[in-house]
Amino acid sequence: MSRAFLKTKEDFVCEVCGEKVKGDGYTDHCPNCLWGKHVDINQGDRLSDCKGLMEPTEIGKKGDQWRILYHCQECGHKHWNRTSPDDNFEKIIELSRLSK
Image (cartoon, rainbow, N blue to C red; front, side):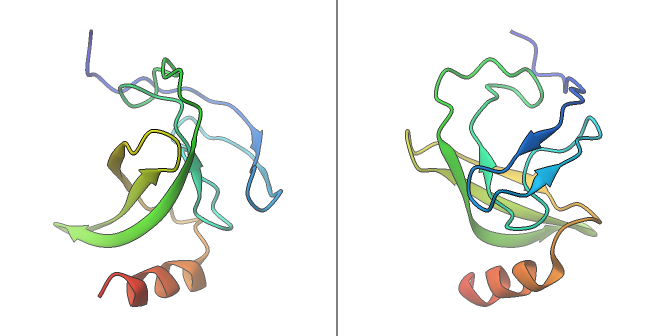
């Protein structure tokens, strides 16, 4: 199975806060509440059978890029994703306080 990123452009309604999200092909979480959904095995492939909600649990920095650690509420899978310029900055600050 390829680990190359697959750009998948799709819109969705956040299952946590109800925000209507316009996908740009890189969108993998709600920019309002930062929650995501476990839909990928490899980024962008949409092959995961889990479909559990991914809770943002931690924020960290790799180089000059801020990233969010996600934890699947259904199966326990964890992975890091980049933040987006559209992300709710107040939620990122709140998450950074919880990460300490």
